Length: 363
Image (cartoon, rainbow, N blue to C red):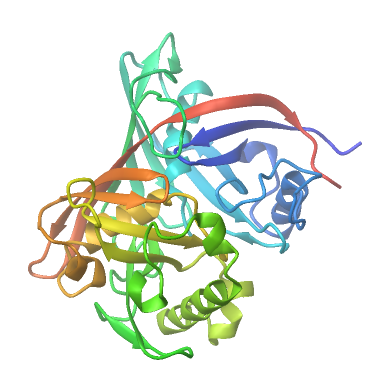
């Protein structure tokens, strides 16, 4: 029998993943990746022989360890489903909230009632995140009145605030140096904005890809093979422009999670949300919105000349976004002089421990 590994399964926002202590697994490298693929049951579209959940939102791992100093370090792995890949180049905003709760429950930080502040360091990007976790009886609270679109029950709010998150992945707020680039991958020119805040995202007008927010369900969009192929070609060309890959065709295998794509449109109901968004992750339309996408959008919407900025109808640090499952509120502090800089960006999530015990990776 394969050696058992202590593991925790947690939901964070609209994502779910397996949480592991760094001390219990091999060091970063091929051996660690192989173990995680075996743990989640990849490659297999059903992940039937592992703990993966068959979507990009549920095929995730978090590796956590204390230090340096009072900081909790963590590494996010986006585990391929049909492909034997583990992408360590980005971060998961939804599961970042769960890392803070995990740190409290595992005794990695002193639990202080009623609120514990946890300073996190994302090892993938080097970005620090301040998190606030409500605590009762020495553990992270899970009950409360905070609703998250895409989660059927309310929970206790966990506030995550990303500090100086510009250039997290590429070292540049605008990885290409431009607020807008124009590409043509067949079908005519498409304007896009590539922005790196908390993670790197490509923003394009939904109308330029023939997508009308809310007109088709996520399942219907994901059954449109022509649309998905076109989005991947667009993503590949953006990856090439960023310097992430040498050739756009290499993006699917060499950089499946960076960048991700978000399609933008002015809100169909401004009283509900200022922008309508459709996100794409790991080759499929996302059922909700990645947390880092919300954070990146909050900043991008304040950067003059970007597509999110041109699509919004107001100004200010607060932004409401509507995705296929509901809305999300985000804020960002952006300074434009002497050079554009994102001071911080934050979002509120909920998280809950689902199980803990021993996991048995496939050998």
